[in-house]
Length: 150
Length: 254
Image 1: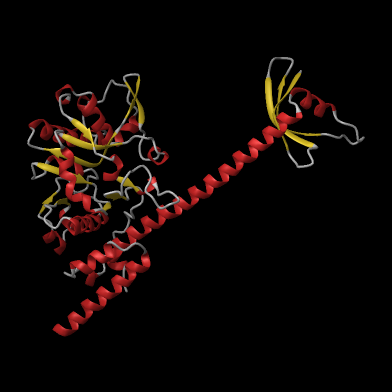
Image 2: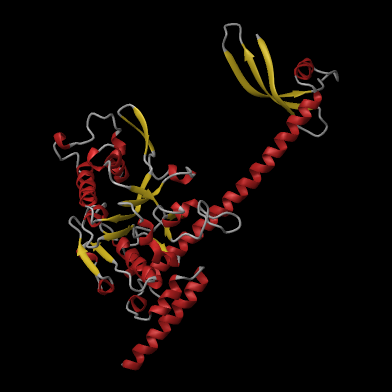
């Protein structure tokens, strides 16, 4: 059986625990891999053999570098995730606004209104509040017009 | 534009027509629509024609084949025009017979729209042309034939379970059955596999996605629209429009 410790990085700032990918080549040639945590000290207070093996393969300064790179990568991912969430929310807002406008244009008095300018204002509204304000104004205008003709 | 099968498309088409006329008051706008959808707003279109098969979801292809104009800009109706440059759309045709938006730069969101990459005759092919908008010149008889073939061939795809197999034009090319739901696949076939149409000049719009910008492309953190240099002209809500809003009249009360 052959053990190989790949991509080690410090799990804590005390630098006494390492996380890495443990790849084991078994006697029958089968290869298995898992994420493994290697502690520096055993229960007896002595440095563990696994730790020695990891350090023998990857010097401390390289593990430092791996750790920094990983932190940087995770930081970038968090920023990208946050950006994606914000973009998705903005897209949803745009879609909701579009659907809301379509609904508004099916309100009888607005559908039947010939006031193109007011309808264009509804269409060009940048958010639902603006759209609602223009909608209410047009409905009121149409109602006033209807009352005057009755 | 074309509205069939679902009345929500008609509502959206009315809105789109108004959007166009906001920026282009003299624009000629023709609607092909299912007869039962019509209301007084049809009077605001320059022409309203009945679709041939009101229950067929892709009657857009019938509308495109039967446009009353020499030069037509077809638009899917589930979107909105948001920029004055719509008035310059016909300049985009230049010396081409047809212009399309090309599905490139591979935004992740496109992968959910269509099976872009597919197998045909053992080769991996890619559907690049998007049928969401199309600018074309019907004065060329080949273009007229092209549009008619697009409709007829897609009709066979959609009704393949009842149409005899000897009419299955894709047969023997190792195309997955799931591809047959896409009219874009028919478009790909016509532009890549049919010798008759090899001389058609097919081009891409300037600033490509500007003419068919899907909301799923999203805006960046500065509020700028991704994948375009300038503000989009047509924003397409294809993947998100509430197509189930067929009961507006009953639901909306203020």
